[in-house]
Length: 367
Ligand code: ATP
Image 1 (cartoon, helix red, strand yellow):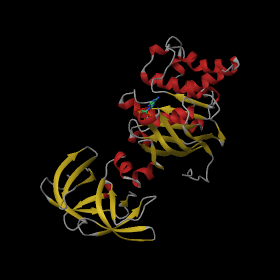
Image 2 (cartoon, helix red, strand yellow):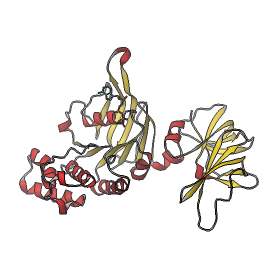
Image 3 (cartoon, helix red, strand yellow):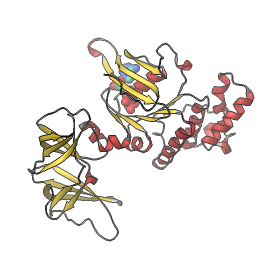
Image 4 (cartoon, helix red, strand yellow):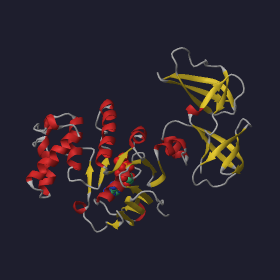
């Protein structure tokens, strides 16, 4: 397939038709199967997918630690196949920060620049600038075996950003941090990316992390890229069942396709009621349709509604309540309702209720 055309921005990294096979013969494993993604300059781009889907393998090929079996990788238009890792204007931050424990924070950040032969004055200015960026000026003289995990993560970032790479690769860099610190660092990372203007390619299996930080996300499964888009695209317009299921919570309804007019589908729900639904990118016409509706795009009603059933379970989450409704046609549908202080969710287990799907909330998947 052709890489997606991007007329509005320059491409930093263009991976085209990438295949990576490990091993030979019947035991060969295709870790990547014809992957094409075009990552723009100044973009916070995330590779998101479950363990083993090939994220790290793709990242390692961009870094130059691994070579594609087939396909090309271009950096700003130039094929980089012949360039060893250290000659690529690309740096990597690993999950294990790999700092030198016996050196100070300052020395860790300066180390790479010394290796590159930078002049002393220039190194001093750059290290100071980087420590300021990651808010670590005050601990500059502390040894890195005497700082916290979050601080070590900041130092690793400062060190990777110091030589001003064009592209920074980040392989699950926040996974060792506790929940609260991880949330803080997500915002910090995004800030550093926009302040430096460096293209970030971030690997994670955490959908919430991807939605929070990314300009665009590539959702991967089993060595393939299933969908590339903004967090909004990926969440609200999932193209395939895997994407809809992996990101957030969703309801799937089996429906019959009634017709398509001006790109909008008319589908018949199991209840016999017809609704309009948008079509996923790449939709292939078929008689059967799988319709997805996010739980917050539906509400309970006492009369009417496009679906009906019996409340099976009510789960309170502080900010919202999840109401599971066993539909008359057999499947379960979840409605997410925002809580307010003054009233309860308005239903009890066993109640008969209707479900109203918001206009424009339904989407037909492509497969
Ligand atoms: P995780 O989130 O667990 O790191 P991932 O999405 O990054 O997963 P990869 O590490 O890219 O996945 O691995 C993709 C597949 O390729 C896996 O099945 C893995 O076992 C396999 N693989 C990776 N490296 C090699 C290797 N050097 N030799 C053989 N198989 C490998």
